[in-house]
Length: 230
Image 1 (spheres, rainbow, N blue to C red):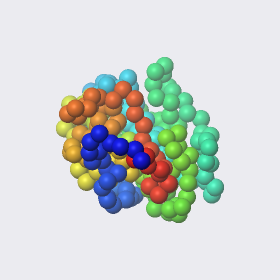
Image 2: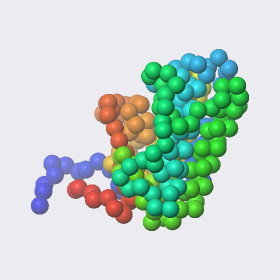
Image 3: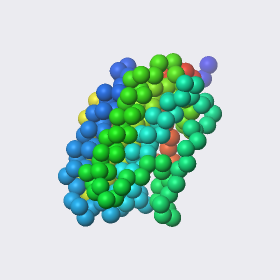
Image 4: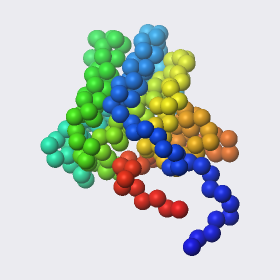
């Protein structure tokens, strides 16, 4: 038996929290779109927080994430060791490599419709795929709930990036953050508020006694398939 030098800090592994659902994804996208509708026209070509992308490119990237997760779940037999082979392309050196690009002529309202559409595709796939479905992700083979949680995390943290670039206030619901932390970051500390903890888990902030992460990844595996080391 191993011996511990002291009590182990409480983490989201120790907490029983409801699963992440397609409704959670719908809520995250709806809140993000509502915030981004407030953005001044000049803000779309500014940098999104600490990212190297413009705010317009960041929304395209977010839509692309949601589309890509839906696409992974789409085939009758989803691939388990590779992505569905769409062609991802960047429109400028250093820009995000996407399948999804919005028509600039449609303006910000058109861009946000693209984001809503991609979120709707993923939510529909999560609702209709059997819970036993598994599909590839570089951070671990995952199930529909896992892809819903990934979509929520992408939406919440990239909206944080956008809000920084656009000087908007953004704080998503704590219970929503807690659910995705429990699903994707089970070893994140549960002693701090869920939203700052999610920003810490994704390398965007520090927590008391925990410096900002320079590298990070989530655990996309279904809860029942995790092997926890204690």
